[in-house]
Length: 126
Picture 1 (cartoon, rainbow, N blue to C red):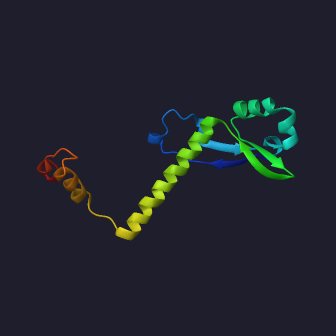
Picture 2: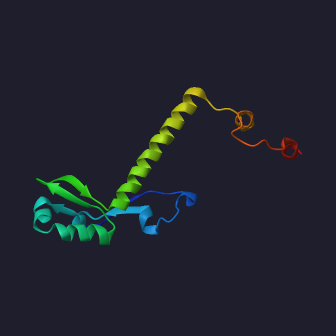
Picture 3: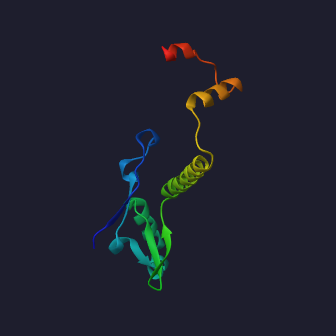
């Protein structure tokens, strides 16, 4: 059976130490879907499969997917993506509700509040 690939693209500056394999999550329905009996009979083998293959393992109960096993590192990355998506959605909602303002106005406000050092504006306008 063909392996389905679900792709997550990450901006180069946000990648840090992420390996190329971490950018694409794949799952093989033939290899990565296991039963509760498989889990009960040899749990260490499933843990080894998740760790070595880098792909999640789906545990099916009564023929339906019930639980997904994945490495802690992958789980943390997915939590990071969910949190990032929530922040992006909040930002988009704020822009739609309140609009935007010019960058120079925002920078001046930060400078006036002492949160940003003042800069030489004349040099930029020349």
